[in-house]
Length: 369
Image (cartoon, rainbow, N blue to C red; front, side, top):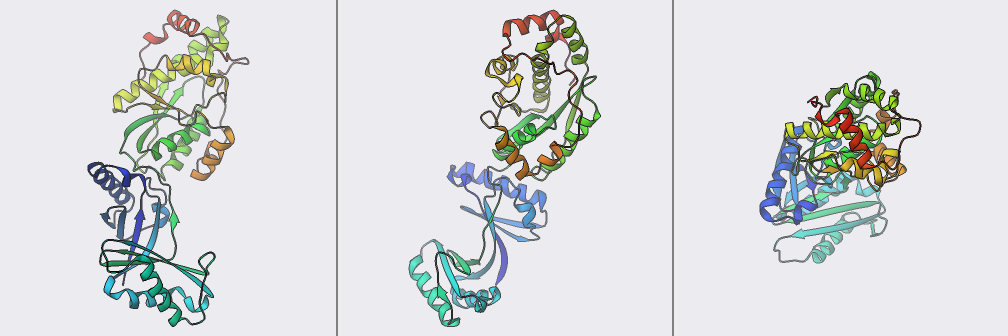
């Protein structure tokens, strides 16, 4: 009897054979990236691991839905192997048990027939045991695939989603607050490799905001091991902010800033071959995220802007942040943005904003990437 790990995936199974094979291979590559000593093998719907496997790492690999540590025997040794496995589980101490059998391949028996045979075998060995399919003390799973049998007693849930990188690369604007890392994580879960970008607004933000952003990326590294925060320093907004205040247009500062950051992120995305930009925006959460203002922001982007949190409320976002480990670093102490106006515009006019930008030469300023 040999020890292995059974890894399950879901959406990959639905793809055409060429795509499925390619995504399976990517998932196995991603597993080996974090566990280089693990040996991998795939079958349709399953990946098998042997060697040095760390379940705490396996839980955070996108594409893995669940996994189990299994004992493997050949079909001809099913009965003897099952009794040995039951003794290792301490079945003699249990009062009730349930047996779940799944079968793949052509066999001279049905799953139900084999379940009856194996159940009788267990009850003969442990005479005090009774069957309880609803709430058993011990639950044994048997997966029969061709001439191989796998025994396990638990299923551990994992992060799910699609294998990291199968959909390409996106640049994610990271502020270090609660929303943007959750948005980045959600796009990772859909198979996107994330390049996090922190736009250092010189004269408006201090180092505490950068430190917080670094801490957040450290938490996301559990899901994308090679993730590294990229920093672009932009001093333009500081002078623009002063000009907006002097001209009585301070209420447009946040819109002006966001459009500037979109331009920077787009230029950066083109440099790294990314297919779009991710933001943590959610409708109505702050003044710059009303439908009117989001329309003004969209106008400046020449590549797709993805907002996975657009319909989420704050409590939902916080719940996810807690689950994925980004919440605590996101609420660490950091100074706020000095340029936030007391009464920001919630319904900016695109014509007005573009007129201000044209007057200030915003679109003609060389982007710092």
